[in-house]
Image 1 (tube, rainbow, N blue to C red):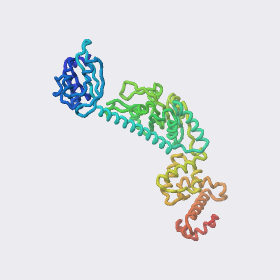
Image 2: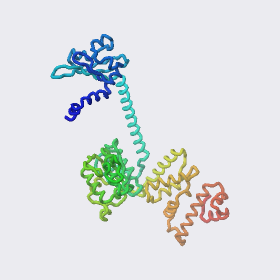
Image 3: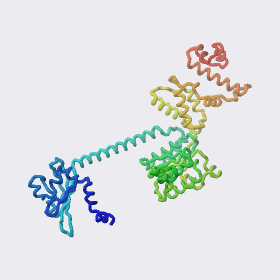
Image 4: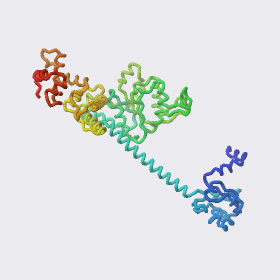
Length: 465
């Protein structure tokens, strides 16, 4: 009704619409007299409006202005006609002519004409775009696979094998997972492993670091907001993390950092499977797989009043605990090999780690877990100027712990603990320095002591040269 009233009030509206049509429009009356052509028709046909308007199609055919007329065929058969023909412009066109009726009587014919070459070009562009999209999709898939391979889970221990078996089983379902583990154990890597092995692996994977987002911005970041929802809000609004993850997976990393008010809203999102943007009144339906992770003791946080018990039960449908590195026997040597291979490949080197260094790294307690191990390997690799990383390049904290573990205090006899440890430390340094130099004199110079002093200490500690 609204559209009809516009045309009734302003008949010129309809003609303006025809003028701006990208299709060529040709109209004749019931006697085959041309009454209208639009600019697109002029461009396609190569004919000016002044050359055809008011003229009969039969005459135009006789004058060879046209070589065929779909409109005449429609007036003859009273049926819609489609054909492909070439205009004097040299352009090949696809024309569809339809009868115009008024009370079951034909009062004219309207033709829609399209440039076939243009359609062909458009088709080619669409095909090209489709191929490009397919190529980008394949490249994205390869990059994703490469990403997961580069960030892969390196393990040999039975503890991690059992953890991954649980994760592999849980990955096939959409149940919410809570991954618990100390900082640096690889909770995010395990979450990506679950995502990669799930039915949603080709859908979005969005990570939210709950500890990194300011508390006053968390709601708007997680749920999004409407235009002008608060002071400083964007005029166009913002899509929240949950919306971005729709149909896919969202990782709520460090879930224990959420404030109680946000926990309440998150609980509602999980229960209702819908989210409201800040300032919005319409719910946005969600289909999301939720994975949460934390390095906190959530049951203790619940007792202390810092975490909602009902939210914990919602998140802890499938609990997975990642053991710390110190309890993963056999994993450290595998990771050392993995990190060293990556570094050598990246920097085109062939650096190796000595057996003494590997032994010390294997015995270390690794309070920072896998992240700390990776950082230590990278530090020694960067600081090393030879083809082998030696014992003296170990960070002090690892060297000290190694001395304590590898030399029993019970062996010290009547010596005090500190004196005994200092002597062990001195012996290790001298042994390492002797291995790296071809003579006693060079070794003494490196240690900044007299050769005679070095000789005396070698004899004291019964060091084999």
